[in-house]
Amino acid sequence: MTEARGSAFGAWWRGVLPTEGAVVMATGILSVGLHLTRHETLSRGALALAGVLWLLLAADFGVRLLRDRTRWTAEAGTPAALTAVAATTVLGTRLSLLGWQAVAVALLVLSAVVWPVLMWDVTRRWGRRMPGGVFLVCVATQGLVVLAATLAAAESQQWLARVGVVFFCLGLALYVDAFVRFDLGCVRTGAGDQWVAGGALAISALAGAKLLAVVELGAVVHEVLRGATLVVLALDIAWYCVLLWSELRWPRPHYDVRRWATVFPMGMTSVATLSVATAAHLPWLTSPGRVLLWVAVAAWLAACAGAVRATVRGSGLLR
Image (cartoon, rainbow, N blue to C red; front, side, top):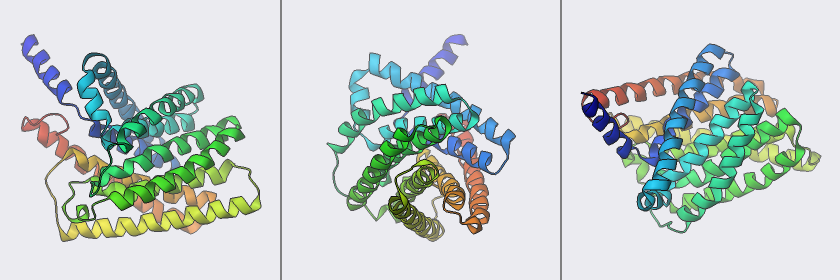
């Protein structure tokens, strides 16, 4: 019996894919949103779950790097590999909000070290007509900005915010490049990761909101940053509407691990809306942000239900 269990666990472990970092991203951002809306018990529960999942995926990342370098190299060249950076920055952001600044700093350093390695592998293999995962180049970059700006506010480190402004602009440029390469047909046929087209804008808006709260670069730069943040949020909401309409027009009821890449943009849009409401002094955005948060929670529960059904059917924990 023990050998059978060990064999089953080993089979699952070998089947873990980089896309499953989106589970941590989705769960972590819901924890942030629940914290912003003062549902602290639920927020900490989601944080604990995200932390456990992150540790499992980090262990898998390290084991493959040491023992299966061929597979690690192959997977590191896919956009999905960048969920490692994005998931780490989302987790670090929530831990910083909890007051665990030393751990958050360590996660920022880890993300900053891994980011250029994965970005190089991913961008040198870029092509045309790519799926929604192509936007993860923007998500990972803006994730660094969000965590850096959060730490800048907590530790009064202006230099982090100033570096964040540079990466914020880089993230927007990467979004444009990714959009050119994105296959728009995925809006109709995608298995869930097409939502990252909007999620990348959502995390960009959150990055802008975080910078607005801490950066000191003069009134003109502040207004330009505020305007850019509002435009990016508006584009994100537009994508949200288009993608939601596509789900109704072309239903895709079957579970796929890429559905977690749907949950994350939904949660990120709610958090971005709530954060922009505060940073840009637009309180009327708070109510829509709260509504979007509970929509994201419902999507998270639906994805969990799909994962459980897949497990019962013997398809693996997250497939």
